[in-house]
Length: 101
Image (tube, rainbow, N blue to C red):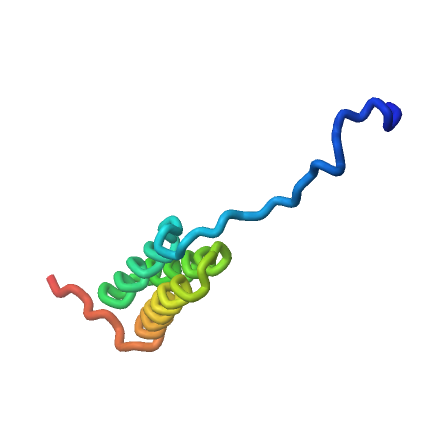
């Protein structure tokens, strides 16, 4: 180990990091939330199981990466509602009509 006298760092000059304040309209786009809404709507309209499950997964990712609670929560809640509505209509709704040849 080297002695403390050879240490070039100056503890008195150290400053704590302060994150810059970013306005909500300047925040980057939440792509996971947008994709969740798109998959959720597709799951409800076209009754695709995979689309509704992917919407739910992207909702979880969007919640995990949420930065602005006020703006992002509305979008995430809408995506969650679409994905849950899609799953309910797929699993508990009337069956899809079969194609007749």
